[in-house]
Image 1 (cartoon, rainbow, N blue to C red):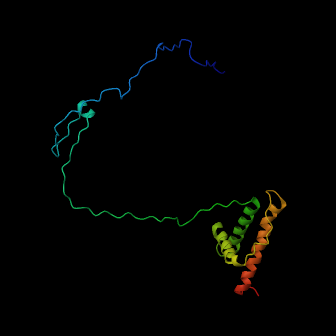
Image 2: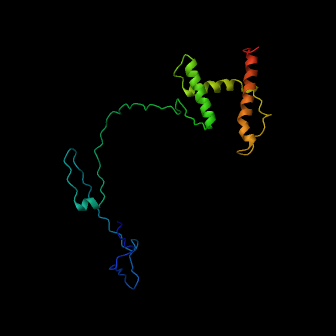
Image 3: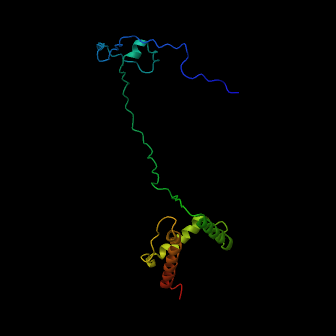
Length: 180
């Protein structure tokens, strides 16, 4: 069962406030403390230091350490780290259908190639290398505009783009003499 909750201030609460305003002083209104001139006290080296008294804790004091002349030590040079990591991470936002196609392609490469542990990044890098080599043959001026999100032209844009990629790859292969 829930306990009853008494909200607000207790009934016996009293706020005693004086009727007239309270005047609190300002630190600028106070007189500054007079500086005390002290004789510098030298601490002899290798002696136990006394525990500071209250007077010493409240007043600043300069203690000079004896100056020793030592030969400069050779310091190890800091190792420079590479400014960029060797592997650059990149996120791809794929549609569920494109994700399935990429996974199927990776599985196909793993099944039918000598490398049964081929990674997704390696397969994708192979695809990118192929397309990058054919980019000079890529004709994108004739592609239709994508259109508004959800429209037929927006849904068809990846297919039209893949056809342009295919034509560019075929033209590049013909130039290299891979296809007659």
